[in-house]
Length: 300
Image (tube, rainbow, N blue to C red; front, top):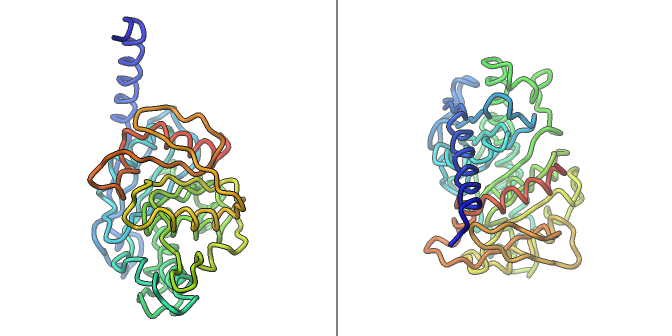
């Protein structure tokens, strides 16, 4: 049994967290409201604003995995907003699973898959995304819209363009790969990958080429959280993350729900027994892991 004072301390901490989350301001935005002609794929965009007086002046873009709805990330987003971050989860074209390229004999399959979804460049035979509905454009137009509605969001946009140095790209599964791809294309504050990427070329026994390219975000700002029994192949995921962050030696740290993280490693792994192992990294019982990741990725 815990002594009275620690019990009171834990209860107070939980109450404080609950109050902070209750002060988070949410809004949903239809893509068409941000730019004429943009389609809604699954749901409106989701935006979360931290409580007044709890502002880190940084923004997380949380990218769902295949078929993921932006509005389903309310709990995840509120957890980071309670830490002082602005958070948006965009609705985007994510209807084709990343592993469509896993057994391809085309070594550029993943590269083109990511490029077309990210920028709308017509290079992939697996997806069809135009420039207007590309992830970068939908995200940019969302931030411009929010900045016009509320001055609090204006610090993340300048002259109609995203201020990438204030952005942390995060994502789950397919979204983890998009977050890493963001980091390759732009100099971000940090990158958080949950249960991904899945960009391993089985025919070539190697991670996709784009992951090995030199990117604009420093490699020490990439953090990943994986499950050791992920059905999408943990060993492939580790190799992908190592390629993204250019690590010759892969060191991981095992973590458990509700436990603080004491490590210097950037790849966190759990073996928690859950039915949905692939989705387990998004469970709020891992908030301590998330705090460790974002602290390391942003240098805060």
